[in-house]
Amino acid sequence: MSDAPLELETTRCALCGADDTEQLFVATDRRYGMAGEFPVVRCRRCDLVYVNPRPSAASLGRFYPETYRPHTGAPQHTGRVGPAVRSLVFGRLGGAAGRAAGWLYNSLAYRAFLVNRAPGRVLDVGCGTGDYLSVWAELGWTVEGIEPGAAAASAARTRLGARIHEGLIEGVTLPVGAFDAITMSHSFEHVRMPREVLAIVHRALAPDGRLVLMLPNFQAWDRRAFGPQWYGLEVPRHLYHFTPTTLTALLEASGLVVEQLGGSAHADGVVRALGGARGRFVRSLATVAQLPLAAALRTTSMWAVARKH
Image (cartoon, rainbow, N blue to C red; front, top):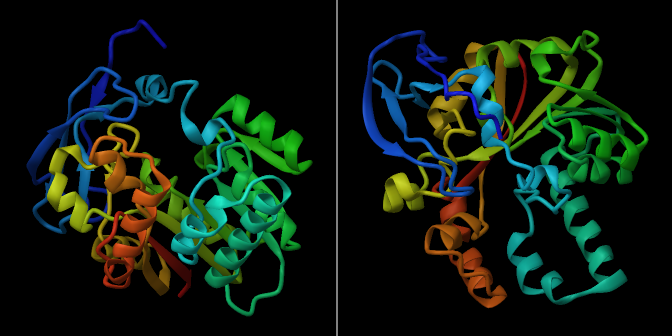
């Protein structure tokens, strides 16, 4: 971790460009306990929620320690389909049976995002060590990734034998109209310039391509219950905090049309906010209890599938 002083910067609203906010609360890094207090504000004009002031580009890297989970190769949530089934059934399997069940779960989850679409070329932005891309590869897709962490990018490259760009999407030259799908699984909330990133995505998508986003939902019931203790905040790594309304507005302002929008029922955010109870039974019950909330877009995470106008 750098010993240099933490540099903060202020920013305007990424959705409407206004500089007119109200402070909701001040939050800290609950996940890794790194020093700093960060105001979470809401734009009075369009309701977008974001961290302001926030760490500068030069200072933000210190908040991604070596133990940052997406860089360790640990399995990540795949969203929309099957978390309750995985928790109740697959979680009890080990060895080859467990790996096979995990592959089946992931396969069903990804197929549900892009129904009736033949395998093509997919780009995962913020691919970590390649956990998500490995599923797309198994499903017959040609995979490519972007990852800012050097060690994680190297691990993904070795694991997949695929092109993995090291850096941020803003610094990568992508061919126009080349990708049938671009995925951002819990990475979009990390970007510093969401409008610019969506413009890059728009150019890189094929005419009939799809953007698949998975990210925290600031409208979730548990966010309202836990406030600044909500695990989904993860400040200051999560710079923006979207609701279904603000996410849809930002995508539409970037030339994208939302085709599908849903919630994901899994217990991680609730369990961690309550103090880290990790038992499978507790997690399974919490997941099942959230299924109706997921249908109403009130759970910790949400997903969206969008196409070009």
